[in-house]
Length: 316
Length: 216
Ligand SMILES: Cc1cc2nc3c(=O)[nH]c(=O)nc-3n(C[C@H](O)[C@H](O)[C@H](O)COP(=O)(O)OP(=O)(O)OC[C@H]3O[C@@H](n4cnc5c(N)ncnc54)[C@H](O)[C@@H]3O)c2cc1C
Image 1 (spheres, helix red, strand yellow):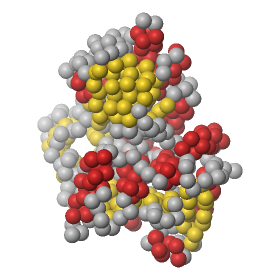
Image 2: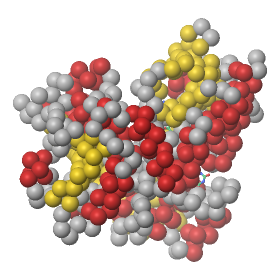
Image 3: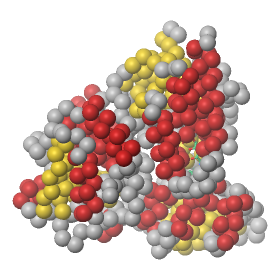
């Protein structure tokens, strides 16, 4: 057994800053480093742990400079790097933002931050499948996080619904810890990177395509997944003990919308190439902008957003 | 050898230096045939060495203090002032991975003899005048779990009728099975009211009140 230690960072109290970065995932952490280095007085506020969704990534093989690293370990590096520069306030959810004169007042659980600018690096939450049984069996075999709950299914068979990158990584991880996964993909072909496709084939993880899941069934706990085979139209059942759902993400942009930030029809925050939104001194970076959903892109966008904030706040 | 990395120690030392106010006891209850007891003791000792206000003590799980606190699984880690907090802020199983951060935050809160909760939630919390035990099943690789653990522990710091007990589900599979734990955090209050997920204080307190009201 390995012993990882994740360190807490808990800032207390309110303060006046140049920039509040909401969300401490890869985008927010990178933004924090760039903002502080450029001379802005910034703070990162996160409702959970700094690290964000990347903490759920079992194994990252596509971040430059790291051939393979656990998401948890990668974000630990990010976090420690950012901590050299600025304060990160964890378990401190931003609940509201109001505009007072030329300041944004960011109201979080454990303090208020008056700021000249905001970067939304709020990321996404897991999308639900919206089939019967999903809500009823949540916690009874239905899960959205393999690193959290994978252990409970060792020696058992589970369905991973959604065969995109996250679903593919989830299935590979499950196999690694001794679970027997079956991937169910809606589209007629592999929807993940070729690199994952190869591993899935090599490890003989079943990957069914053209599958439309219509129901998750079970009495006290998950017993089977019902699906339509879209090529034949046949309705089939698969006996499983668990279901991990990876069918996409929903942007967290309600607070941004509240202060007038424009989003697309799915709720992703609209940004230009310098990560500016339509509202002055308000920026967005990372998965909440709807680009690519990759750590390296989130980090890059975070840096860009911070540089734009520097231009607008310091150079004006 | 040490479990905590040198650079992490440096960071923790500065956090403790900034935030600790009064003495905190870090108690580890150990027993025979206990796979992780040695590690729990070693980690607690390493943490205690980081600041003079943190005092490490090892106790036996079948001893008097364990009995007084109502503990029966080893290892159990208790964070306390030795008085009003008693054994109410505890971890059954190793607080490693993400839970290590809960442990550190608990040490800071206990040392400050207070915890942060909004006035509205605190008002509800303070109406609880009978024992309520909140158990939180976690896995060390669950990034959402510390929030659920810390909420229970913050409630326990503020209200002496509340006990917050983290249980490491991978280490105690039978216990987890008894409550059909398949997703974490899985919270069981007074062995009765259950919910799954890391909710904000406002929702969390409602579940606690629900369990409390059944006592009357
Ligand atoms: C199973 C899985 C595997 C993955 N594998 C890879 C991989 O191998 N390679 C790769 O590049 N990417 C991978 N990803 C994707 C990667 O995790 C994301 O692209 C990345 O985390 C996005 O970073 P972000 O900073 O934009 O958002 P996030 O990481 O989602 O961070 C957003 C943060 O904002 C916080 N937040 C939201 N609302 C508030 C609020 N109101 N107040 C305070 N804080 C708030 C959240 O708590 C969160 O910490 C994987 C994802 C999953 C689920």
